[in-house]
Image 1 (tube, rainbow, N blue to C red):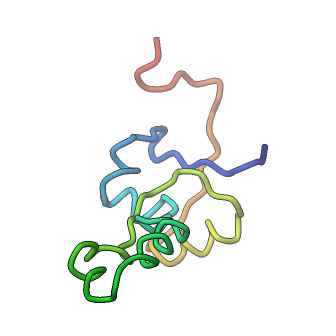
Image 2 (cartoon, rainbow, N blue to C red):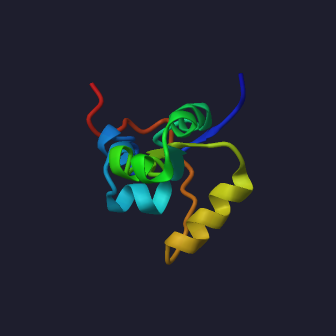
Length: 104
């Protein structure tokens, strides 16, 4: 169990931001890159095949995937990302006494 910082944009966190490369995802969410094949799977594939066979049957063996996460593990990484991808940053203190838009 660990504490994380979760990002909400305009009071919302939409799932489409985590899957698709949208403006909100690139500006506020944490990009996570992963390998399609695990190192153990790559090793087992390479063990029985020649280099030309690997290129022929597994052309995307070293391919990487990308998704976005709303959870940030450290504040310093979040701060660097926000400074790099936004023109200005304003911290807004929420007014908990006021009703939220769309609430009942």
